[in-house]
Amino acid sequence: MENVETLIVGGGPVGLAASVELSRHGISSVLVERHPGTSLFPKARLVTTRTMEILRSWGVQEEVERAGMPREDVLAVGVGTSLSAGDYLRKAAAIAEDAAQSPTYTYLCSQDILEVIMRRVAASAADVRFGTTMTDLRIDPGGVVATVIADGMSTQVRARYLVAADGGRSSIRERLGIAVEGPPPLGHMVSIMFDADFGFLPPGRRAALSFVRSTPGGAIEAVDNRRRWIMQTGYDPAKGGSADDFIEEYCLAAVRSAIGIPDHPVEIVGVMPWLQQAVVAAEFARDPVYLAGDAAHVATPQGGFGMNCGIQDAHNLAWKLAAVLRGEAGRGLLDTYAAERRPIAVRTVDESLVNAMITFQMMAGRLSMHEAIEQQAGRRGSEGLVLGFHYDSAAVVPDGTPEPAPADPYRTYVPTARPGHRAPHLWVSPGVSTLDLLGPAFTLLTAPGSGWAPVPGVKVVEVDSAEWAEAYGVGPEGAVLVRPDGHVGWRTQGGDHADLEKALDVILSRT
Ligand SMILES: Cc1cc2nc3c(=O)[nH]c(=O)nc-3n(C[C@H](O)[C@H](O)[C@H](O)COP(=O)(O)OP(=O)(O)OC[C@H]3O[C@@H](n4cnc5c(N)ncnc54)[C@H](O)[C@@H]3O)c2cc1C
Image 1 (cartoon, rainbow, N blue to C red):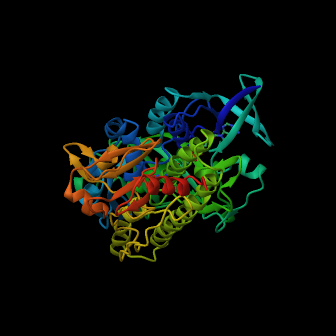
Image 2 (cartoon, rainbow, N blue to C red):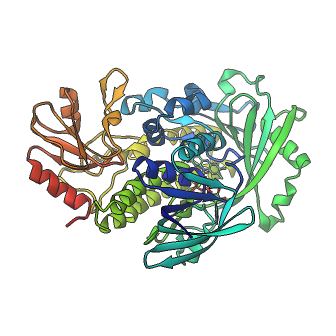
Image 3 (cartoon, helix red, strand yellow):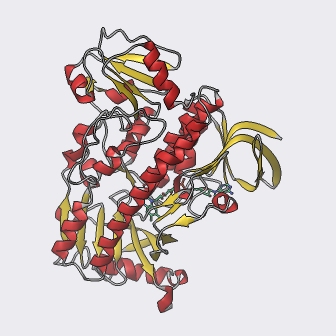
């Protein structure tokens, strides 16, 4: 029997993120993934600004940027009967929209490429086992005992905690009897991956995402924006449709009809059926098992939120598991995982549903092309959701200030260091963001000469900037305590060592 602090089941982006984050917090883990390698299919493409910030903290931001698509290609969206039809309309969202709010941006980098980078980072510091399947699980008073099989050999792994990152059809969630809540499946979808040259399209017709009302119609998505593309379409079993219909001949016809040129050279590379869903697990945790990523919530792909929301789950959970395992926090801290992440997942899944409804209406012809492009483009920027989400739990000490209330909370992010919110970005010196000053432990940001001294587990960083003090809402003696996940845990206009300890006691459930 092997003994580890944490077992992670699932080597998708969320399991890999959990592995990296646990290592960053000094916790050993074993990750098991049944497939021999990372995903071959580019499912997610959109990597949100917040996820890019996490990747920056791992030192791979530039690598992901290089592997992704050029920034100017990222946010353009198009609608039309086909890519070459006269009614095709394209709109590019302002690229600078999120620039001032982060040291990085939203990127398009296919999940198949991103997972390779994540796997390498994870495996550099932890035990990452592909080709290994968890086949059985027992919950013991001291943790879990899992049976894992690799190369036909079965072994048992005992872990104090289990991160279930085993995807939308999570067998662990099922085993625990945790239901999912949400509407019935929204559609039987098929992604057709193909190679084609779109060089004949003028720049005004090139978009990373185009919705086409051809037959069968769907979305055309850029994978590398050069030769590789995905067509997302679907079938209706009630009308006799089936995933088996998607033989090469049918796929070629579907893609060519979407392009609008019947004999355009196209090579079909692969076909992946999937179910469009918008569901959230009724519970995110049954200690010592914690659900993360698609195991806990499945968003529609519209908006590009699913993987990102899951990576943020892992980011939220890892430091809490680490603090409890190191004996620095009470078990109550782990309860704040579900308290913090489930409301965010519900909101994210709901927003993805709004996006899907716009597409359904467009495909059903209930929106004109002009209405469709306005609505699609209007939903492309989502910084309010992506950066503006905040936590309201026992791991946050409120300071009584009101939460920002922008007119459009989906699009508009209002930077604030109000407890519970992501610590805002500001450049403090060339190329150095406030976010670069943080973590992986707690960080106390304060003005020079304010007199705050470090306490165990808290690094004190003096920021010599009036702009910072104003943005963070503190005076010369104030301080902002940022949690290991970059969210503000406590903000004060003044105080001493004992006040800081008291705030930590609350956040870490030590009282
Ligand atoms: C067409 C499409 C487009 C999408 N676009 C976006 C987008 O633009 N942006 C975005 O954020 N999201 C997007 N998503 C969603 C995104 O792909 C998922 O949210 C993401 O893959 C979830 O990651 P995960 O690690 O939770 O689960 P998964 O990626 O499903 O990984 C779970 C892993 O667990 C493994 N596993 C399961 N059971 C076991 C077991 N018993 N033992 C060992 N291993 C096991 C599986 O083999 C699998 O590899 C899209 C999804 C689809 C289908």
